[in-house]
Image 1 (tube, rainbow, N blue to C red):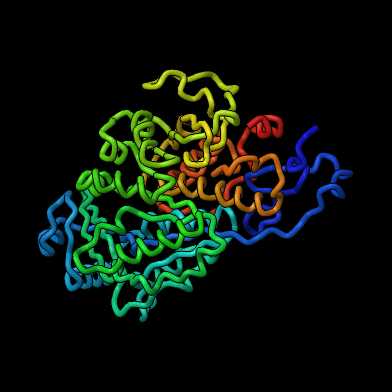
Image 2: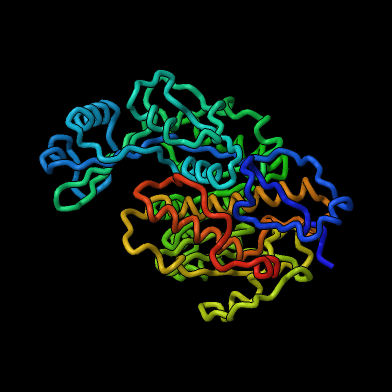
Length: 444
């Protein structure tokens, strides 16, 4: 007989009426009286970010020289230069696109679009916002389901990242942090962690100029999450940040982090392994679950499960640096400390439909994949609150779906962002994966 959770119409996070990504069919209405619908606890995800806006402009080469910018490089500029540059680009109508950025902000926005549910962003925002400027763009390009009520007001601009494209196609970056690192510890409210399903951070938060309060605020948020047994997720941001202090990051992850999101370059900087699968395997020495995007190679997920709940795949076994590494990809991940007999499990998926024919930018693809993982983790917490005695919760699993299925979902969401020219989702996905029938779904 099928488990009762299979016939329970799961209302996953959000108000959307259709089943969206998780199709749970009420196959036998006669069983409804056995397991009536009951109200579930609210859930949301919490993230801290450096609030910034990405500004994409088409410029002549003489502009680079006038502002002292090295062509093809990234240059940190002060506030006066940033303001003058922005005003010139705005008045001359050189700005092609301007959209909210920040890896955590992107991820929270995408989560709220996917789940149609609340997320909470902690950071700063300009107290005075002029129509059409960076602060205005940030607010207007963020989902209304992202709760911005707890942003700390600051007397100045948020961060700005200028991508200046010259006629030859070369991209030159000018970065001004503004007030984005001025988040104070006292601006981290305890209450937002009470019903949270996870806390997401970026490595950038701990790499600030001396005296900035952001690192201290980040550590306070981590302490509040850990005190409530809330999983902490760290996205590595860029390989340069990790390569500066790999030992520091290994120690930080080992002490505080349950889930690491990275690409293959960041994985190599953290572990020394250039092969993404081996990098995932090495990272499991520091954390419980690893999501690694590897460009044209696809996407990897690595974690632990308990030996007595591991599940073998029904797909072909894959070759790799670890032979037949996907053997237990139908398993669901568990924190290592919660396993009586921990077993490493891995999953992989190639780019969805081979990837888009034309990619304007890869910016935000990794954030999109992570948002899918957040959605599945939040769905797991929601279902556990709704059906606490379900067979889906015989262990303290981190996700609702198998590692294989999470890979499919993350891959699909990443593809959707690659189709766009902006790093944030503009629409929700279809209800389910193409070609995925109910039996295939429940087999996982």
